[in-house]
Amino acid sequence: MDFNDFVNAVFNFQDYDQLLPLVRNSLIAGAVLGLVGGMVGVFVMMRDLAFAVHGIAELSFAGAAFALLIGANVVFGSLAGSVVAALIIGVLGTRARDRNSIIGVVMPFGLGLGILFLSLYQGRSANKFGLLTGQIVSVDTVQLGLLTGCSVFVILALLAIWRPLTFASVDPELAEARGVPVARLGIGFMFLLGLTVALSIQVVGALLVLALVITPAAAALRVASSPRLVVLLSVVFAVTSVAGGILLALGGRIPISPYVTTISFLIYLSCRFLGWQRHRRGLERKTAGRQMPAVKVTAGVGRPNP
Image 1 (cartoon, one colour):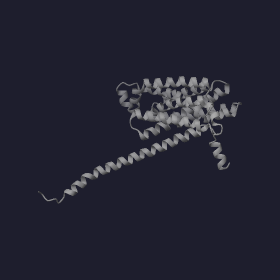
Image 2 (spheres, one colour):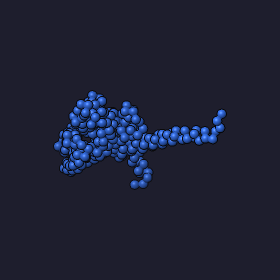
Image 3 (spheres, helix red, strand yellow):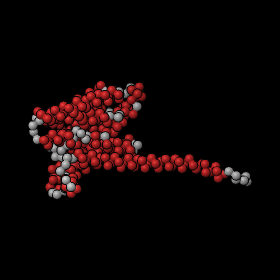
Image 4 (cartoon, helix red, strand yellow):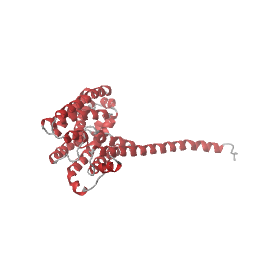
């Protein structure tokens, strides 16, 4: 493949206006997932659960692959796998060290099961590949309704526990001393995280779900310190990544996930650069402020008394 073939495979906008109506449901689903992923991702970063997202995604992939094998609804299979993984991690992994060990055990087990089920599946290979990397036109009306309903549930539940969950995420020991049910909040959040991961797999696939749940929140934390602004930017970055990836993938012959992950990564790099610039200017102002009194004192030395 030469350079022109590569460009045509990645960016080819012939008959784009005719193809655009095919991804209407996917664009709506992407916007909904961006909202949910952006909100949940902030708490994932606060609670240091990035590794847990990957572990949940692997078991969600196994559930979706099993559903594909037996001819059941892939969304339900993905949800079942995610919820089981999230509850296992939430119940058994109360400490960070235990949680990472459990994830390290669950993740390869889920991936192995998923590969086994896909190997036994005799249907279209595109269905297998879509579970790993996402499919741009895979969201039909029924799946969109299910996805929207689950997303509304996640958002409402997250808003209901927002303040105590924030307290428990920032300082769990103090929150527990104040009577906050830290353990139950942790299990409840893991359940919501499992639902979010399962929903995200429908668009970006099991292997690259981190780009939707982790990267936008990590980018927002680089440029904002206000909690509300961090959540707002995380949602905007997630929606931009998914919607932009869908629109770009429509003009190419490759799956949607490389577009989504590339946009998300570029946003993160930009935010990291802006954060570095702001930090450097802050250091320069502090250095200048420390030097000002020294200059004044030096200027006053040797001045004759009036």
